[in-house]
Image (tube, rainbow, N blue to C red):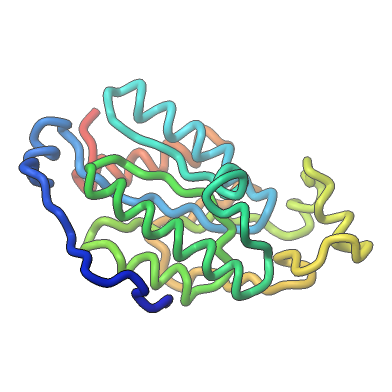
Length: 203
C-alpha cells in the first residue's frame, strides 16, 4: 500500500448520507468483482448484467480492465507490481462509487488472491461480491478473440496470465459461474438472483 504523501488534508463529508441514497435509489451499492482468465467472458457478462440492472431502474456502472488502461491506468504495465497497483487503484475508485450507492461491476483478471482480498477489505461488510468466472484454459484459448494467447504461446506477449504468469483461483467466492457450461444469459441470471436474494435490488 503506497504511503500518504500529501499533508494537511482531510476528508470532506457532504450532507447526503449513504442511507439517504439507499432510500432514494431503492438499491444498495455493492462491488460485483468479476475475476477470471482472459477470454472467460467477464466483460460480456458485465455488459449484460449492467443492461439488465439498468432496464430495471437501477443505477450501475462497469469498470472494465481494458477501458481503465486507456486512461486512469495507462501509465502501468503487466508486471506483478503493476498488476497489484492496477487493482489497488480500481478498488479505490470502486469504493467511491459505493459511497455514491452505485452498483459497481468490475471486470478484471485480478490474478492474485491478496489483491482481491485487499479490494474486499476496502469495502464494508456485505459490499463486495467476488464472482469467479470459470472456464478451462483450453476453451479460453479457443475463443481468443484478441489473439493474445497465441502471442503469449509464441513469446510475443510477456507476463500473460495462465501462460507465463499465474492465476490464483478464488478460494471462497460468493458466486462461481462456469462459462464452459453456462451461457451468458444463464450466468447473468445467476448473479441477478443472488443480488435479489441478498436484498441489494428488487425486481
